[in-house]
Amino acid sequence: MLTKLREMGLTSDHMFAAGMASIGLSFLSWLTSKKTESTERADRWGIFVGEWAPTFFALGSAMRIDELRRGRKFCR
Image (cartoon, rainbow, N blue to C red; front, side, top):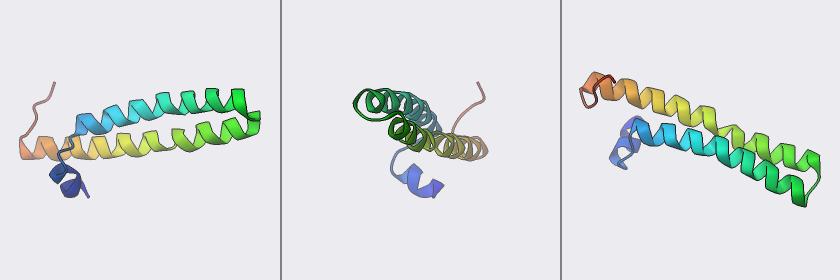
């Protein structure tokens, strides 16, 4: 999977950015849904989108380890 993501031009920084965006999108979807629908429905939307963040962060960590092993990135 990491090879496929790398072939698509994605890096660990992209995955970490996607994780942060997922957190923001989770809050935004919760807030929007809360204004237009019930609180229970808003909570479900927020949790659903919020579950993406750990996946993106895990992929970012795996890609960062792979990048460091391959010598493509330097420790900051």
